[in-house]
Length: 176
Image 1: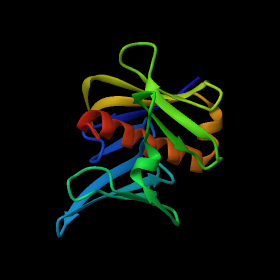
Image 2: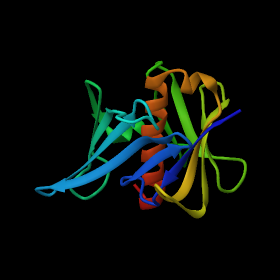
Image 3: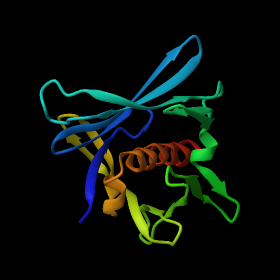
Image 4: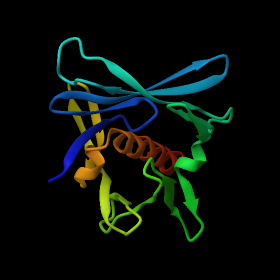
């Protein structure tokens, strides 16, 4: 059984992921003094009154709008490290997760899905584009499916997959 989050907006920098309980992740991009910054927050208790959000990451975009640097927790890294092109196929992107393993986003078996594989080739998550559909929280353009329970059981892993999925969507949409 998969855990499915609906993804609003065709621009992942200004979007949110939600399920039947409410918003789970928010991607809010602001610009100040020529610097574009995306703040990613996670709802701690979706659907409850007075729920609170925790900051997952801050993405500081390059001046040209391309990949810049990411601040996740107390770690700072290049955004490229979260979506490294695979030299064998530029549609494949890799990242190192909190568990120290390398994971790979790649086009899936069907024409539209993008799958995330663990180091052993098992699909643990995938992004599926959908026909834009109107919801109270916004128009949905994609779904993020968590296939492996090990992803949703580990908040740092779920956050890493979500951030890298967002950056993968950005790279594919804007040619980064």
